[in-house]
Length: 471
Image 1 (cartoon, one colour):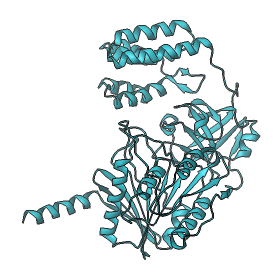
Image 2: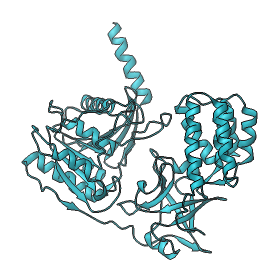
Image 3: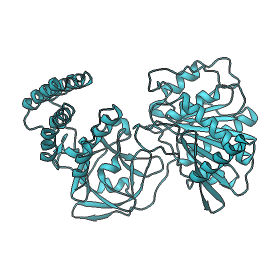
Image 4: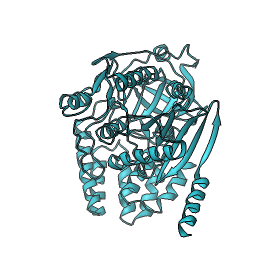
């Protein structure tokens, strides 16, 4: 009797959190599973084929877990028309999570097969950290999967706790690495150490720079080759692949030296902003690749680098480049851009040339200021907030034109129990640009609040400042 009650409760919980959206020829189901969120696209008639998706690393332990994927992309639509079920999991938490992510992928597989029947052919596809996850899954000997597509695989990642995941270099299923030309070393190292596996892993090079900067046509071609490899043992090795995609004529509206462009969509997982912009729009404004330009939203503007990929700027900084599918992205390296811009799909941004279009070299004084800033953070970790504030005031005196030291001065005063003093600083510098016009004071403060929360240093009083910055 107790067992029956438990099963009923499990069913009721599933119903409470499960949602189904019916689309043309398929349905999209969202649900929860062992602490993860999952999304499953199911065609009206399924063929016995299943693709499981492993996403890359998502920073922010307090960010919402997301399992969503683009079910309307060319890649997904092709598979759905052919009767494939496609499933994705958020994993049970964000961050560098590999061992648990492997388990979450397998839980997702079991969930789908319990609901729709055992699938004859189960493939796995992952990007970045997800590429490492599918490589780990490929080395399992249980025969659960038929092939793995690893895009831009980050094969050297450690877990958040510092532990490592040992790859055996002995895949039991076909593995195809699809990798941009600027990131070939990791898959090359893996393949060079191949031993005692059932299938020799294969590397296809995509002839453009970037990280996971591939498009749906390239991924479809690679995936079809992977299926053929699994079915016939035949595949073209060391192939170079490059399929350029165009978005057609520009829709930008030019006025007074600015290009006004709509926001096409926001990447909910990372906060990247995709805009309806073309390379020729940059050229028309006199903005060359490698230079900085201005993005405007409402009454605010930010200085952003037009480059090739995320790694072209330091952690946290602004970057704009073109994805392999031809879309232009405005983003921040490992940070949320949409929150700072305050925009949503359908909003309009504008771009214009910057007064100073190139890099602004860091002076020797600034380098010393950064070194001392690191020392102040070490004092915070030791909870010596008085010493940390002293160091930050010393930094502020080194160059009185720089406002950024006051971000940490405010934080450290608050952490040391002097919130009233901190609040005066939070208020005083609201709306002030810092870091060579790349950020407003409040942008950095809100980012720092996220970091302090992840370090268990967040104070309830900080909520007051968040409300202040909404005004």
